Length: 61
Image (cartoon, rainbow, N blue to C red; front, side, top):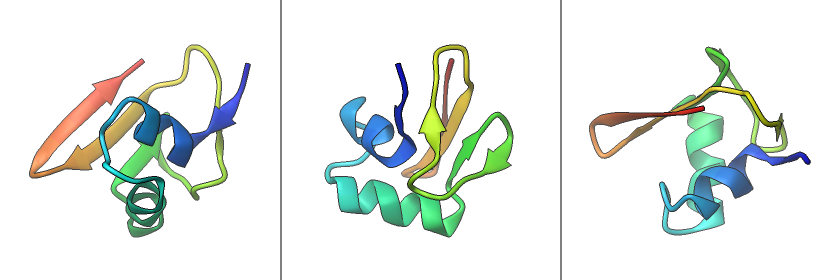
């Protein structure tokens, strides 16, 4: 199953709104497998997501 990266980081509650998640992706604060991504990039099982939120880096696999 695949989902958009902005929807995924919003659904795990790293960001309060989906638009804030999309803005973070555009600003380069969200990386997928160590690459900067656009909000529409898809996430699949096994990917590594890194997000910089509130001066902390969150890493999910």
